[in-house]
Length: 632
Figure 1 (cartoon, rainbow, N blue to C red):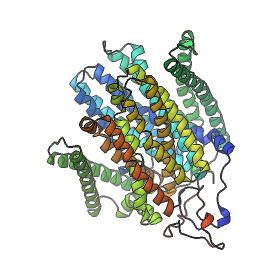
Figure 2 (cartoon, rainbow, N blue to C red):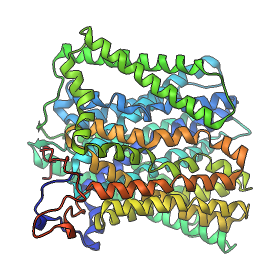
Figure 3 (tube, one colour):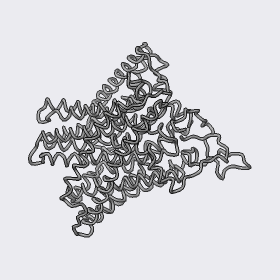
Figure 4 (cartoon, one colour):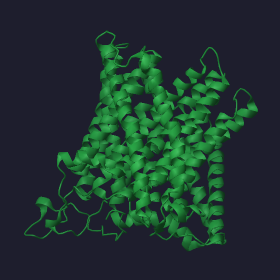
């Protein structure tokens, strides 16, 4: 947790040794989060790149294809319904699995249903395309909901000193899931017989069926895990479930890591030494593929065992809304408010005419978004005033989490929100146009896939693990500063690449360092957001932070193509480097006024005569008296 607490100077948290920081990755909770991160990484590319290629092979116009990306808007607005997850129980499931796991299971089942629905429609007909779009919206909403609950689960699962490790494992699992849903889905579609020259609906249908089956690994993890804030009444059952799950995890992780490492060595060796080396004989590749498919096929069987072997629990947290009438009223309030937001977004957007100016378009989008949020707030307030829902319940759900954040951080909350909204802006804006950039530099799809989808992702994993280790060893804001510097300065490598188009050496140099920096910054930033989150409002506050983290960069990134068309690639990447510089000042100011994380000694050398100095600490911050996590 982040706070400035009245802790005696002698009680500063002991920093971990390098060995302890590394061993933290073997903690059972870290393994659970790795697989839940994998579950969270599967759906996103089934809406974006994989779905886009499916639709393009089916002959759908490019403009219609890009519109499907709107199905993922739930990721940016998930803070709107996050309060429902903190406040509302799932009938029967909450008492059986607990508050967090019940919502995770529901979201995962909805994801599976959405994927199966998308697979059920051939998009070549307009009618089927509309049904597929509706299924894609359901997938976006369900996967965003899963993200909300997994983030809350991760923060509540372990004490603050383990959060950097869990953040790194979550990022690792998420990126592995993206590989499976991205490159893996394309491989399967090709294997089943669909190509650019010959479109096969059956091939894509079967591919999405396999992706739905892969989601069973995430459901399996949820049932094998345990509720963070609950008492397990049948510990023997829980221990057996975890033991079987970790055996299953080892059968996936160890061979998968070896396979990935050998593939990485082969690609780098072949590209840089202009020689062909075979580390994995092609004759055994079918057996390797069969091995992993068999493990996926075993997941539903193991899941059935976990379902019947679920231990009884006693939930320790009372939910805000348990009365049936209040339950329905709150849900209705939420639905009407969302309809108001969507309607306002459409109406306000239509008030402005289209413009070719990138800056003006950005301003219009910002005004439209803020106006829509204001309309939604007015609609919600009016519904409460007329008695649709109880004011005290709505206040506790939507107002108190925000009020708690400002109460704990006072005026410095604005500084924190600015840092949250801008920290990832440099690499996210640059990443929006990266694949187009590689194509414009003369690289083939295979070269891009090898460099970005495999080597780049593996480097991001390595960067995430490094960030998790350093976040346990160093002060949080020092690691944040390092991540910000790396994330912005590596964009200059792409300026260098523009002067050497088609050069694989320069491409790999840029991709390796850029993804190391991105993975490092991502893991550290997730740990930072986790430290800011109050455990009393875990789902709501973290959803707000994560939505704010991507909202401005994604909006600005939408105009990256226009900036490139107007000014060229060298200027664009210099621009993405420059917008990362002010972040360093924000980090310095946060470090000066606010203590973040347990590695920060809030007194240190500033204490005078045994009396703590608050030169760094914001005296308006107080202990929140939060409930303990399961391990404390």
